[in-house]
Length: 65
View 1 (cartoon, one colour):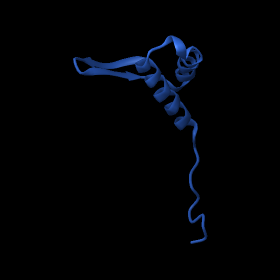
View 2 (spheres, helix red, strand yellow):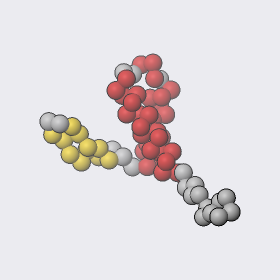
View 3 (cartoon, one colour):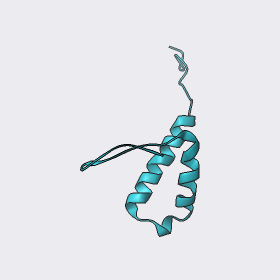
View 4 (cartoon, helix red, strand yellow):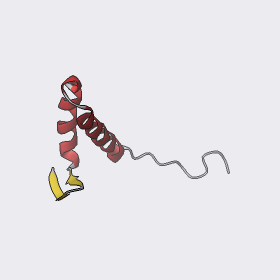
């Protein structure tokens, strides 16, 4: 994780793909110990991790047009 920017309105972070699952999995397994804000962030990171690996592309004209 790298902090790209930090000011009074927020923080911008960059995560490496290889680090996402090692960050997300332990927090989700122990979700009852974390607050809503932490879980919201972790679920967004988990979704991004999934989207990075999702390479599905709709084939052209799949319904015969």
